[in-house]
Amino acid sequence: MESIQDEFVFLADLVTGLAAQFGENCEVVLHDLTGSYESTIVAIANGHITGRKVGDPGTNLGLELLRGNHVNGNKFNYLTQTKDGRILRSSSIYMKNKAGKIIGSLCINTDITDLMVAEKTLKNLINPAGEPSEVRESFVTSVSDLLDALIQEAQEVIGKPVAVMTKEDKMRMIQLLDAKGAFLIKKGGEKICTYLNISKYTLYSHLEEGKSNAKESDSL
Image (cartoon, rainbow, N blue to C red):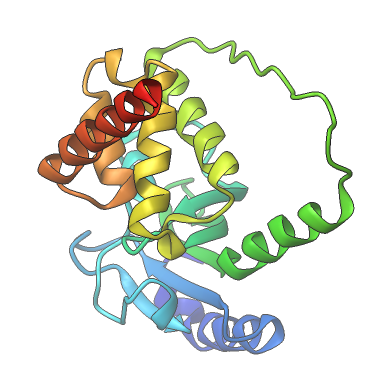
């Protein structure tokens, strides 16, 4: 196959078939990576998952691959997050021509947000109370990875994906991250704002409110 168009009918049917097999919470996307990256999507099913449509661009992962930043293209069973905070379990398969040049990709994104909420509920029902707390130490090779680990740990404590967090949930998560020293990491605040989909003003407001509440509790 030298281009996506050579097998477009089959690939488009594959997109439709996979989406039908796995249901409305599964988005399947076909990208043509031979033209402009501003418009790579040539077929998509259940685009409501990410809000995309035919004619929209690819993601940063595809761009990094085309740039040559990754040796191995295919990536399976990884977690991503939409702009509105929903959690996706994703896989990306890249197609090459006879010369080994990447010409397209098939991406599958399953929304597991509700499943994660259900999992937390079931754990609360199954696990006995009073068990010793787990101490987690993250061994990483960069502060960026360390910050990711702190964010993930704090979200697990909250027990909800960002998309369904209340203001109070986000405030508590910020307080947890502050206690763990996350804001001592360079640009930590910016990354946390992006992850929680809040402004810097809201971040600082939540931090100050958390500190005020802590002082009031200490004075009682």
